[in-house]
Image (cartoon, rainbow, N blue to C red):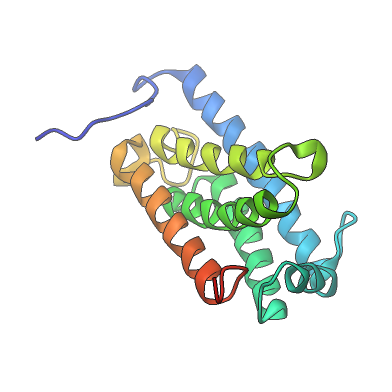
Length: 179
């Protein structure tokens, strides 16, 4: 049975390659900067202390190590997405972090981003899965790897690994402990 390929730009479609490059770089850099905010208190972030305090207030324990993991995941996942390296795994990392953000914000402040809600992390997680589905494009470090053309498998890797890792964090260390 032939694998279903979804949303893949034409083989020589320069516009598609530039579009996915732009999407990868913008979203990847934004997420890497969010990771730096969590880790280093740069760009108005809370640093590890502030991030750990926030995590503790939402029910994550142990908060400090999880703040380190979340910050590193956003930083490294964002950078990998931006350069198009290990794209399905970078997408999975970002889906995992954003799924945790969705779980916390939906239960505390709701959906809309104007209230600090889940709207933004949902969009970011969907973009990460879509980039895995489309493929990182010609202008990526993955350009000669089997998943470079995107398709169902890379998208499923990103979605399943991301959601399973997020569920593990939520169940074993997060707000769902004891639920």
